[in-house]
Amino acid sequence: MKKTTVDEVLQQGIYGPLETKPDERRKFLGTIRERIVVALMKSQVAEANVYPQVEQHMKEKPQSHLFLNGNMDYGNLSKYVKLATKYKIEHTLVTNKEHDSEIGLVLAMDHAIDKEDIYITNKVSKPIQQEDKKSKGFFSKIFKR
Image (tube, rainbow, N blue to C red; front, side, top):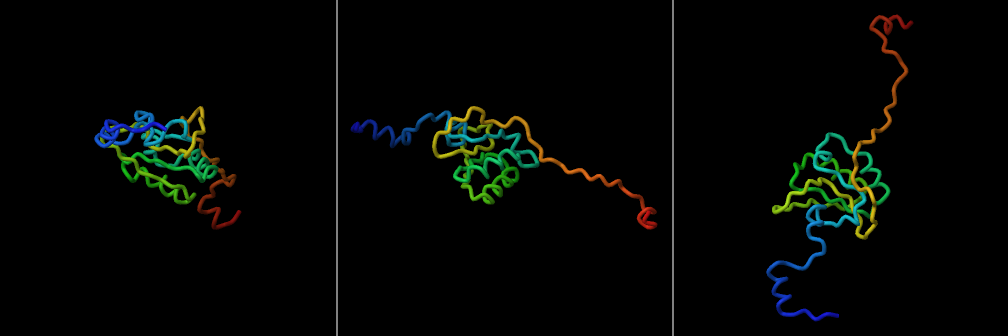
């Protein structure tokens, strides 16, 4: 085990503890890429509906952690906070005043999973059930033909 020198202790006291991959951690809201299950950009998080892929990953990996960009409007984030609460997933709002990441949401594990494709590029829509009934007019409802 390496013994820390006085200079190293002073440096950590001034600048904070040493951190692995600080640029990557700033970009991915406090975690590193190798731990990420899925990530969304700010514009995707700001959309009206939740991405079903994110919900699916939350169902499959209840031991994951949700990181949300705290520099965004909470109204955009609240739907994902509700989902995290529904699936009992811990979540953190990450606010970094020095660096504003373009990432809006990260679902990550506490260990490396090295997933190749972490970004969701298109929204998979839930199948919409169409009714075969034709709309009936006012008189057809009255006379029941």
